[in-house]
Image (cartoon, rainbow, N blue to C red; front, side, top):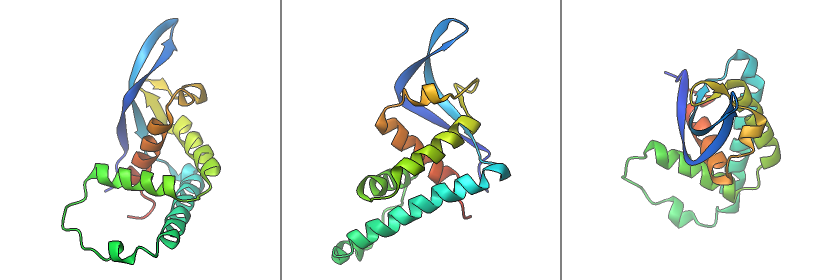
Length: 145
């Protein structure tokens, strides 16, 4: 069953203003995409899949490593880190991917479960946090079930 939302806990804290006061954000609550978001979600996953295929093509000479059987159970964190690794090591259209992802976040995310996420707040995220959040999004909201 797909999740209705997930909570993304910041490792790097960001400051934001509410009612003239400064607060430190601790998390984002990200709601699952809706029907209206179908095209954007499909494009986001499509760009990622293209990156995976390019990554595999680029690394196909390492067949001995790929043929090893791993008996260890894959954790949620392993999945997220795997996605990040592929994104970093592939030549996917990252500009387009992040434009789509940012639009989806602005439509669906709340800072500390209350305040809408704005493009200004997104710009305060570090590259590491942004990649980790994208990885979490792709794992938590898969396009195929």
